[in-house]
Each structure stands twice: as structure tokens, then as C-alpha cells.
Image (cartoon, rainbow, N blue to C red; front, side):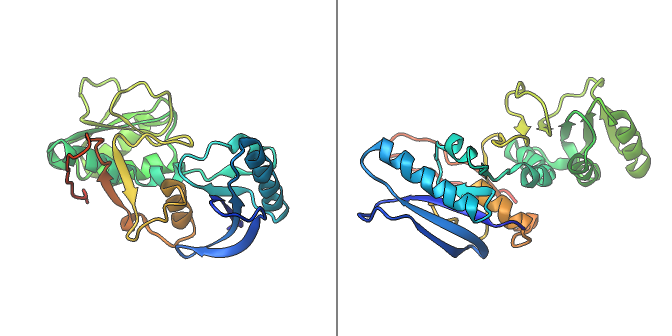
Length: 250
């Protein structure tokens, strides 16, 4: 696994960049601490120096704090954010079942649609996991979808349909495509749409690191398995003084 950077803006008086290797939830990363000045112009200069140092150290992928907005500057040095797509697609089946559970639908009574441009490995694995559990599985894939539905019917004797059927899914999982279906799970691109769910590891993620990219790295490095990750409803935004409660969907 390549060396990963961790870029942090810090509240401290010193102007010097601090660059050191550190352990982040078991993952070795190169931490770049950038003092945050009052001036945005000075901050950009410091981030520029930090990006140059990370690139010279061989870093290509970088973690940052939630809400970090200067990825364009980092891209000039060949630095990019961590892609969470592989992790999210590996969790396609549990996410679909979590959506059914949120609606109070038992898997054996539920209809799930898997959509994409072609049958890739994550979509195939999700179909294998879901077909024995759900009542109906719709394969909405132009390239290879009909063949996959035929295979699932032969293997499981289950209701595996193509997009031409009249069945209406209660959960839709998209592996590619435009985000045109409200409420669907879009597990593609640098910012997956998890339809109001969050992914959580067994231990708390440091607030200075964006959670989903960090989980993707821990999973990639074998420090976290898909089964270790909880799928939980995202907290609701409530008026001040209003309490809410929720429990994980497992």
C-alpha cells in the first residue's frame, strides 16, 4: 500500500510546517500539520508548501478534515483524495438490507434492484449475497444483466428479474449512472450517496479526519473488514433543545 498523507490545519502560533509519520487507527500515514493563519492568502501558501512536501515524500493520496475545500490546490502536486467507492460497493448487500429494515420490510418480502452499466465484480457479489435472502432481485444492467439474472435463477431458483419487469423495488442500489432516482443508494464516484446512512467502525474516528475515506483505507489495508462496519441512520437535524435517539441496523 502506498504512503498516504494526512493534511491538517492547526490552531497554533508557530508558522512552521510539521511533517511526521504517525499511526492513525493502525494505519501509518505522513501527517502534515499546517498552522492556520488569519489570512486566507497565507493559508494557501502554507498549504501549497505542505502539498509540495507530501508529494516529494511519495504521497499520492491524502486524508483531510471534514469540509476541506482546497483539493484543487493539492491536485497541482498530484495529490488526490481517497476514493471510497470500492468500500461502499463492497457493502452494497448490507446497505440494501439496511434500507429494507428501515422500511420495516423483512428481506424475504422485499424487492431490491441492482443497477449499473455492466456486471462488475462488486455487483456480482452483491447479487450472490442478496438473491438467497430477498423475495425478488432486479438486475438493471445493460451489459450482462440478462445473463446474470439467468444464472441466478439457475443457481438459486429465485425470482431474479431484469429491468423490463413490472416489479417495483423497495431498495435500489446503483453502481454507476446519474443520480436521478430519489432515495436510491449511489455507491459510485468520490462522494457516494448513502441515502441517509452512515458507516461507522468499532472505534471512534478522530474528528480531524473525514470518516468515509479513512474507513476505505483501513478496509483496503486489511485493518477493518466489511463485517466490522456498522450501517447506521445519519443523525437528524433537529431544532435546538430537541433530543433524538437511534440504534444501529445490523
